[in-house]
Image (cartoon, rainbow, N blue to C red):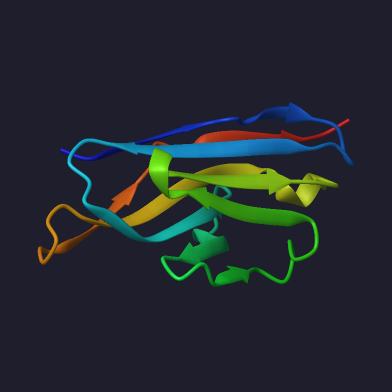
Length: 121
């Protein structure tokens, strides 16, 4: 079984920074996609940023220029550096990965458990 474990959330003042981390464990041959999503109560989960195996990145308009996604293939990890945080960034943040367990096997989609980010005075 593959599991994604997230860390790095917490309470921060507006203008502050946080760095989220997500690491996959278990039977992993390759990770073809990594992304960060967030969800507020009563709203749909939305894409924040993602990165492909080819290292192309994509950001939501609301975070572009403030957040940066990166990956470490050797550690099966993806990170989200969040700078100049705003109250509207408050949400539960989820890591998503698309993973191959065999060289020519199926691709599976996995989600992390979520980590709370609260931006408030």
